[in-house]
Image (cartoon, rainbow, N blue to C red):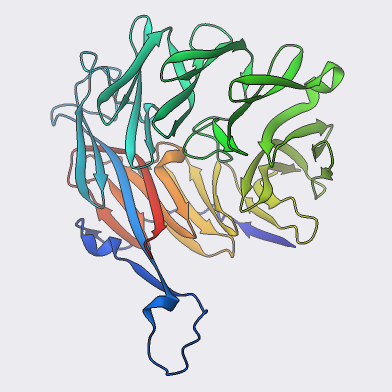
Length: 408
């Protein structure tokens, strides 16, 4: 089955509706009938209804009123305040700057599990904090590609800023150091909040490509998977279901394979930047396709019984997926628009900053998008369910996360 959505590249108008102030009514519980009732009395049975709670986390940077953060002539050195909001209420307030070892850049802020993790480089160290409190630091200047908190142990995957090396650490202690290219990052649509680190079969995993082999790493132990002539064809690797899956490109064709399976990606277009991700026991893929002068972002499932392919035509698409709930956020300079897989236009707004993948989230088909107007006289806002929730600050939103959990 193929589902195609066209992103209409038209002049965008400001999103309709004025800002609403932060209100707890946005975060009400949702009651869903499970359909398992054996009650024949016709009366409501609370035991047959599942209750889901929605929690919205927003990271925002408050800038001094005298400073133009859009131009940022101080290159991030101006002291600010980094706040983490939970359902519209500030729960963390961190002073940024070199003396506090917390930066202003959105790509150094990571909302994971209801906490805000920050990364910061001094002259010779990398510093990791959670909610402003120091977790650990270590020698060497790195850019994080992944971070996971597993039962209180914090694992990091960091890429050196000076050479091709990277390190895998637990609580700051070195577990593995290698040279190579890591598959995945925080900004990649195929990877979740934890970036290139993920869990499979109870093990912490990531994959990378070295000079002579590609490796899958489980709990810090590398295993060579591909080498020789085939290495140059490897575009992505993923541990899934205890096996290692590899994406290989042959001319314009792309295949996905494991030790026991092999799939050729559908369509006649040329596939680019194909990556893998799991959902609900099935492996999915996403990437870009090129056919003539038409570019598209595509996402589909690798299923033997009911494969699905979604295609969003247009450049600069971020694809947000939660199983069959697939949403595209398209960028055109400072204009942002979003559509779901049925072609329904969800959002159309211009003259705003969208600071990368972590400024939107799709949870079960509910889309949240964090936008910061170019006009500093307007407050940043989160768009959700057709409404704007404004944050009455001078500054910008650096990230957003939405958790929907079953409370009973």
